[in-house]
Length: 184
Image 1: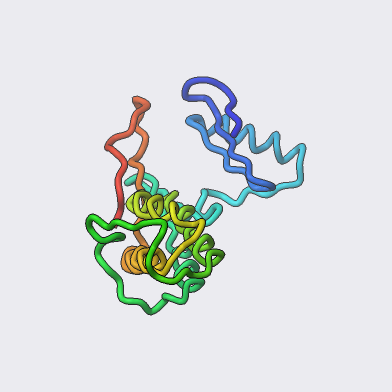
Image 2 (image 1 turned 60 degrees about the horizontal axis):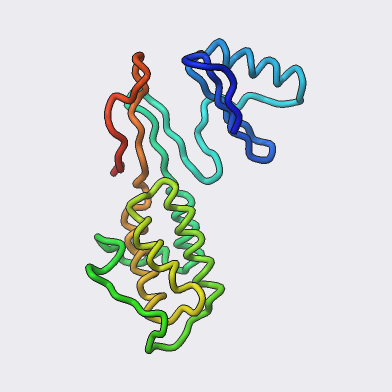
């Protein structure tokens, strides 16, 4: 992340390998920076941000929304749960799991892979953070009861895969109009 300037004229440049996200409060400064970059490097302007690192970005008068619906679909496909029955909550109420479970162990690599994917999904889905964090505790030696709890989270994702986070529009006074929240 690189920041240039101060106040409303500042720029923020996010860099990931060969992709740049450029934003700032002054559209003239953004355009000037883009022109400088184009004169130095061979690059093209893809317009307003719409998809980046698995995040689907929608910008409009109501603000910015971040979703990961396509990524959630890939997780369900990888886990073989595309046609599962959705559930209303990511975890059973007062669920207690132990590291030394009584059921047989499951493939630890598969368990870790699903948990890792769910952890990335938490970027736009804070409603998953507690359940995924809790289930991350059992990655060393997962058992069937741990995998059953992961499948419950996946069933919840299946029913809410188009949910995401929202950020209201930035006001002229330099603050957000409303608090950010979860979209449905």
